[in-house]
Length: 460
Ligand SMILES: *Cc1c(COP(=O)(O)O)cnc(C)c1O
Image 1 (cartoon, rainbow, N blue to C red):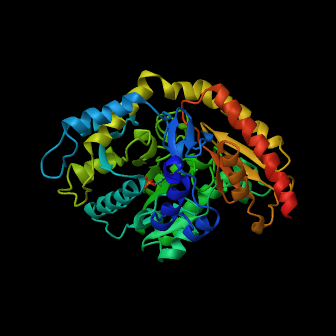
Image 2: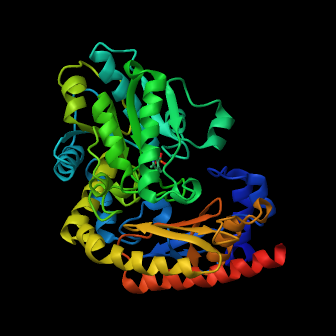
Image 3: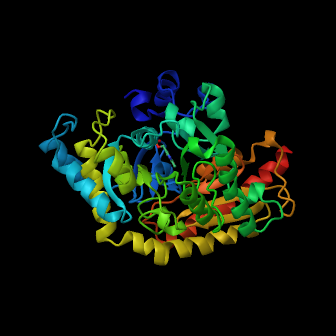
């Protein structure tokens, strides 16, 4: 037997480096550091690599594997649908049962003013669709000059040109001459990073009022919509103060602009509600979803279209010149339908709200006691840790020390996936985590923070 057949890891790593261009990755650096970890299987809340390491998945894949790995019902739903009808489109006056049933169930689960769904293959495409809907809406109302969309710095709305333009990631803008015209950004409600000595309540109001300033700067007659994630995910689990969203809502209402909630992460139980908007008292006109809707087992996203927009664009707007080959893909819809039915049947959203999240929030808060942690915040089942050199001044470690990525690497080598956003560590475990998994997550995080602190000290 050849060496390769016995342990293909080295062979895979070589081919991976030579041929596979990874998303958001410095390929050369990855190769120099020994290549990528190869994940070969997963079960429940654990993933396993090609060398047999068992790792607690604190990120639910990429925020999406809400029901954990190995759910046979989801595999069966995909298999049945692929045998029956693996693909058909719904462009030319055709439709199929999975898309009908899923759009109906989503309309039932979403807030009362939502009754229509436009399907996409991803969250990025969902947000591109929102741009199309927003501009179409104002155009049909005879106000085509109302086309500016206001978004936030450090927001993440995807990686297509539209999604990356709405997003506020400067590194993405720099590489592509973005945003596209008609998109403006205001500062984010990041209290730990920007709040200074202000109380969270005061700071929340101040950051929300930046929207009003921006509307007046652009001209109220030119502003079409505001888009935000109820809790910023990829930006570092930025949880706005409770004063923030009600003030944003007031401003949107007062100026009559559309409010878009990007719920790609926050929908379907992540914050202990079916929609994160409910948790924060947001009354959106459009909602973007993806990720958890199918538990990540197959790609699916979409826009929930509220009645205000549907009345204009759907009921009276003629043909909406927009669509994707995989809009309403039957197998993806079948898996999403089964995901939502499992969430209902097993009362997982209620359990997250009443039990899992409160337990996680309490245990996560203990990490604030660690000497290198300046803040440990969480809401629902998302959490963040701010790594600092000095707790009272919130001073960071020197940038060249790469405290965040150092901690991330230590975590994965010690059996825990925790993601780094700069020097902010973030988690978003599967919704089905049990107390013992949360204990393991917090205990491993503490131990890895000890190791990170020691490693930073040695490197300084
Ligand atoms: C992940 C994400 C997206 C993009 O979704 P993709 O499926 O990766 O295109 C958009 N918005 C938010 C809030 C996200 O977290």
